[in-house]
Image 1 (cartoon, rainbow, N blue to C red):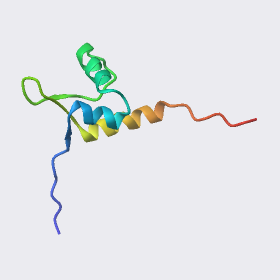
Image 2 (spheres, rainbow, N blue to C red):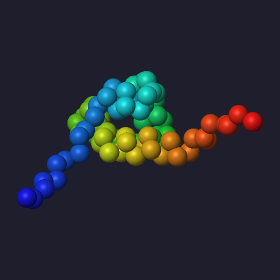
Image 3 (tube, rainbow, N blue to C red):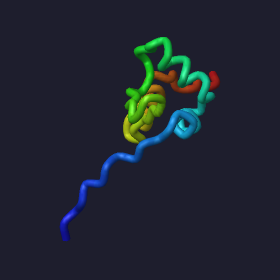
Length: 74
């Protein structure tokens, strides 16, 4: 059986922000100000912006790797 490469799912700002656990306004603000610490956005129309689900997942994973492990009680 052969596998078919399906295109990555595209999320709008609201959906991407929900997956990231932030407000859509925050994601919009980051994009507007050109924050280097955000998942890449795709412009698909004059006013439409989308995010690849895989890019959002990678952004989340990068945040988890930078988080400090919880302190163990002494």
